[in-house]
Length: 603
Image (cartoon, rainbow, N blue to C red):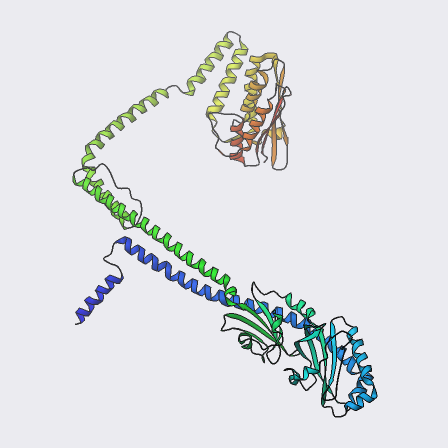
């Protein structure tokens, strides 16, 4: 029984792990799982977090708007409360409140005085459309007849009359009044009137405000693309609604779900609106901002769509890469199979290219090693003959080098000494002098191997070179070597001065028919550098050629080329041996001569 269960478990494991499936199927399934599961987890978490952040930001934004509206309206109402207190504290009003019967009011004639008081208060502010004072069961006095407002005798029957607080707090309501024969909305500020004798409520004062003033404030509130703000009183009636036809009516079921006895909060209504509310204890209002939840999560839906398409595209790319990867594996295995068939028929001439270090790469490497060992047995005779041929070539090359080396510098020295002896024997001192100079130059160039030499040695070489050229150019060439003693012991890069002097001869004297003077001097630049200057009065250098030479001197890359000893090569050798701050600089002008400064370290 246990063995049967183990076999069944193993069978299911082989199915789940796709053991018997093609490699391409395995890659497709596993790549999908490896990508899909993390993407779904990240997408779900991102969507939830985005929803929470969007709701929180919407709530905070709505609360900020409502706080601004509340602050502005509370300030406005407090100003009206001061106006009401002025009316209530007026002597005529105090006398009116002491009257207990309608007959007493009529006999006193105070009605006209109170009406004038109310009219004066209404005239003082353009936003007040009417003021009315109601004494319960006694008298109603308002501004009727002056501003064409309807008497408010029917207000006692309205829903809000009995709900006005008995403690003297203000109540703000929205209602309709008859103005010029039309029903116009007003915002009424209502508070109880108390008897001076019993301190019991005996009536009410109502101040009607032009609703457009308040509507202008509310209409400036913009909430998203389709949101709106409504205001409810303590009983759940609309104090403000974008649809003025709903003013004073009971709130809809959606807005009635708000918690009228709490400070602030937010909730999602059954109608699919996101409601944010805030209560004003001073005004007795609850401000509600309603936004369709689908508008609120519009950006979140965009994030969701982005995650979906990102996942889909990623899976598609993963499938494409899987196909390419599987194809590369199968291609290498088939190629290995083809090479094995070629080896079977005795073809050892080719090897498999090892493209990787994985198992297939190791297998190909082992196969190549096996084929290589077999091939060594067949190529042994060929390699032996090849080695014999190579040894023969090396022997021939050695014999040629030995033949070439038979002519050595000593032969040249001895030849020059022989010429000098013959010249002295025939009293030809100038030929003897020239032979001696050439021999010394040759000996210096071939025997001196140090990278730097004292400046004295370089000056001596230049003097021998100029002495030889003097025989050639005679009066056309003059030279002067004016180097102080301190400079003669300073180090200088070997064979760097003579090429500069040679350039002055070749390019300054040969093209010029006039007399040319070459001057070599030295001077200190600083505590760490000195300069050797080679100046000539020759034909100068063409500006384009000079610009090209100066450009090459700026190029510090590259090694010196001993086969072409020139100005740029000398410059590079100096910088290579002494440092980047040393080297050559050249100045010239046509028919004005050339000056080359060699800057070297001073020790």
